[in-house]
Image (tube, rainbow, N blue to C red; front, side, top):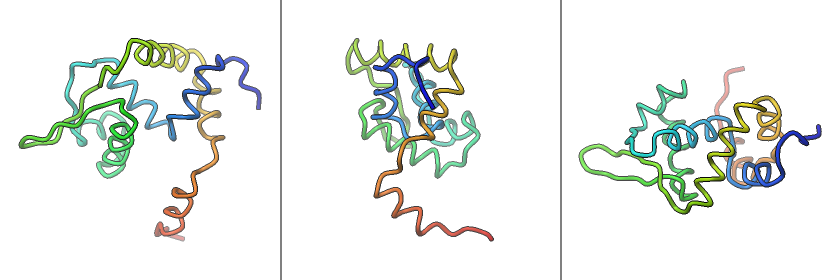
Length: 128
């Protein structure tokens, strides 16, 4: 499928940094309100995913430098303003995602899984 509706720099950003729709939407939630602190439970509720999925998503966003983690009595997460360039890119991703939801969804789903993810998936217990 051609992704000519998505600017090349945005496609590359998504392919390099985003592994799932939940990750993209999580990043955009943090970007939308950069001063807000989120818990894994709150983000899980916002994204309609379970807490363990939210924790995995949050770890990935922390590892990629998009958000920061702060632990006091409760662990919270907040958008990390790294640079104007990155913030501008994420703003453009948000705008383009609203316009081209289906092509961006297809782009994310077309990414090959990493070897680590494929290995982890092999150990998932599934109901048959």
